[in-house]
Structure formats: structure tokens, C-alpha cells
Amino acid sequence: MSRPHAHREFLDHLDGYIREAKKILDAWNVYSDEHTDLDGWPYDDHAYGLRQQQRDADTAAAFENLRAGAQHLLDTADAQLPLVPAGTAQTRWIYQLGVLRDALERLTTLHEEWLRTRDSLLADAHPGTKVFDAALAEHHAECWSYLDDWATHGHVIGEINTAARHAPSPLAPAPTMRPARATGRTAAARR
Image (cartoon, rainbow, N blue to C red):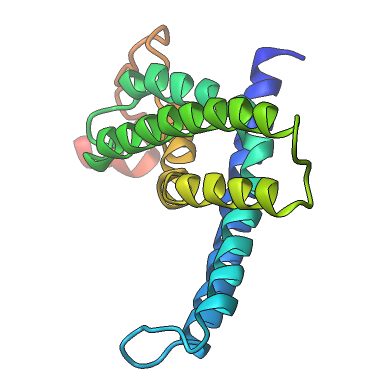
């Protein structure tokens, strides 16, 4: 797979993740509004907790398509940023890239920790058992805010990509000003 093709595919995964995470969060917000009192306290703590676990698990599952390309997208955005003309660049981009970078580092650490935990659990427990499922739910809960950072700020990568693609090439010759061609009217007016 060529590098530009891979980059386009990773951008598509990012767009898909952002759309899916928004749907998941919108559904969660509707559920939360309907199942909490005016102060935000759940009517049924157990049911609310299970629904929150589902939100976390669904968001984590949606991120899996993006996980392999996330670092590439950040590296490419960092490389593209200097190509964007100063008048086009947004000051928030640096901050948002930092949020995404920190979130990805944390997600990577949490993923590695989960793999170690999962491997140790598999000796005694398997998916579907209370012990395994509780550990997985805890892992998803720890990841959720970082996944939400990617859903909230991930669009910056596409913005930078678009701005860099539309930026003039540094290798292109500078535009030259050609004198306006005299038309019949302007030539007559000069006489």
C-alpha cells in the first residue's frame, strides 16, 4: 500500500471513528437525560452503570480501526503544519494536537496494561466470567476520557491535512505579475 493511500485510509478511519463516537455519545446523553433526576443522580445506579459500561465498550471498539494509524496521523499532521501558510493556520491546532498526542500515549499505556492483565486473567477467567468482564469494564472506563479526546479533537488532523494540501508548494515558482493586456476600450482611452 502506498504511503498516500495509507494516509487517506487512516484519515477515513479517523472520520469513521469521530462519526461513530458521536453517535455513541449522543445515545448516551439521551439515556442519561431520561434516567437521571434534575441534579444528575441516576434513578437506578446499577442500570445506569451497566449502560455507561456499554458506552465505554462501544467507544473502545470503534477506536480499534483507528488505533494502528493514529500515530501516523499525528506524525503527518506535525510534518504538514509548517507547510500551512500563517494566515490559514489556526492557533488552536497546536493545542489540539497536544491533547491528541497525550491521549494516544495514555491509551497506548492503558492498552499495554490491559494486555498484561488479560493474559494473567486468562489462566483463571475467560471472557463472559464476572472477574474478566469486570476487569475489562474497568479498562474501558479508564480509556473513555482519552477516547473522547480523540472524538472531540480528532477533526484537527483533517483540517491540517486539507490546509496543507491547498497550500502553495514551496518548490513552485512565485507568481509573476503580467501587465494587463490592452483591450479596444483601454487602448482608446490611453490616446
